[in-house]
Each structure stands twice: as structure tokens, then as C-alpha cells.
Amino acid sequence: MTYEIPENVKKYSESPIFTHLTVPSALTATHRTKPGTWGRLVVLEGALIYTREGHSPEVVSNETPATIYPAEPHFVTCNTPVRFKVEFLRLNREENSNG
Image 1 (cartoon, rainbow, N blue to C red):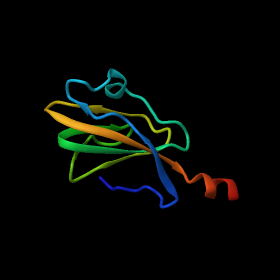
Image 2: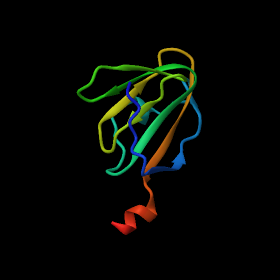
Image 3: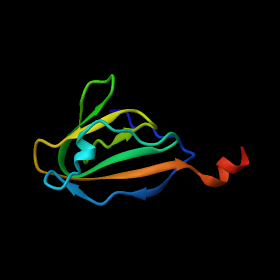
């Protein structure tokens, strides 16, 4: 998967670390980030499947993080043991206020 997050987008938060046993059902059902919010799906151990609406499912591992695009419907599937987190990013506030 192509890892495309604009340079002017900065991390502001991250989720707890989830496993295949603790992943919230909200992440395994179709959901989306808010407009203007990007995500980085980071797998620490194992692998999971990341599905974006209108795209083929992708295997995400610690070698291949995935980009979560603003407001794009998506979900994850954990078929094997995995540890992962989601980092949340948005426009740098300083750059956003100068526009």
C-alpha cells in the first residue's frame, strides 16, 4: 500500500495498542475519520487486513503501515494474532491558521 500523508500533516493523538482479542468492534465495522483527519495504521506485531471502500483489501504488517484517508469509509479484519495502534494526524495548526 502506498504510504501517502502530506508533509504539512502532524500527529496529534494515537489510540491504545489493540490486539486481535481487544480490537473494538467499531474498528472491524465500516467507519471513517472526521474530515481533515488522517490516520496511520501501525502494526507492531503480526498482520491485519485493512479494507478501504472501493479498494481491494490490503495486508498491513510492521513493514507496511497503512494510510487512513480523511472521511473515507474503511475497516480492519484481524484473522491472526496482531498488535496495532492508530495514529491520528491533521493539518499543523500554525499552517492552518495562516491560510
